[in-house]
Length: 340
Image (cartoon, rainbow, N blue to C red; front, side, top):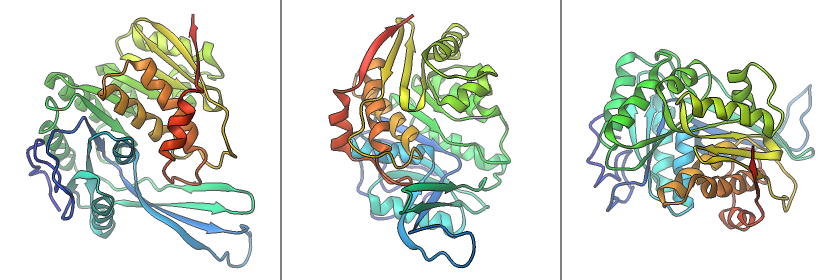
């Protein structure tokens, strides 16, 4: 398993361990995951409040915002490298799972253990319960090593995605430092995070910011119910230089994509089945956005595939990956309209 001594990005591929084929070209997208996880999905027929609940293991998969984004970009046909922390036995398992999946990645060793999360799927109700611990405490030097690794890629790849939560021990302005490094190298940062780290990064300015209703409401201090509320937020983000492109998602309604050329409402297409979980929808959307932008698509077109991909992700239980064919088929059903 490699640490901060990352390989040259033009030959990276074995960075997270053995068994990963070398890339022959720099990645289109590099993702940063400071607080990854292993998602354990258990299935029970009916969740009882007393006695034992007999469960079967439905899946064991790597997770965390940036790691999920990298995995989905690869599934969509793009090239991505995931930079992430890894600590303890769980970190070793995370590296091994990424290797087995064929995802190019660079692991930065940390002292504390990588977290595990539990997804409980109740078959009778078709509902998922996602239980997520806060994760490890990082030393300041461990955060610096992640930046050092990231710097080996920025500039040679057009897009960087910083996604997921910031673990304890790091300063609130950590993602702001990431944004600064990315801009100075001539790459573009796509940000998807929350809390104080989000506000600090937006003060620095990013290329694209994606937020859901909860994050939007934390920024506005009021409910974000529909496109009008989302437009008010996006206009503020663009006017203050917080983002060049602002994407606010509105659950089952869809998303608003805003650029210097205007606002576009994108409506969620009709689902071809019962929605089971929205746990992976956000990461799926960001993956499609990043993959399309790296392929040369404009932000609105990229966002349309993002909305379709998020919809496809809702058809799978827990954090299981979306069906690529379903996502592409839903793309043509995403209705758009100019807003404001």
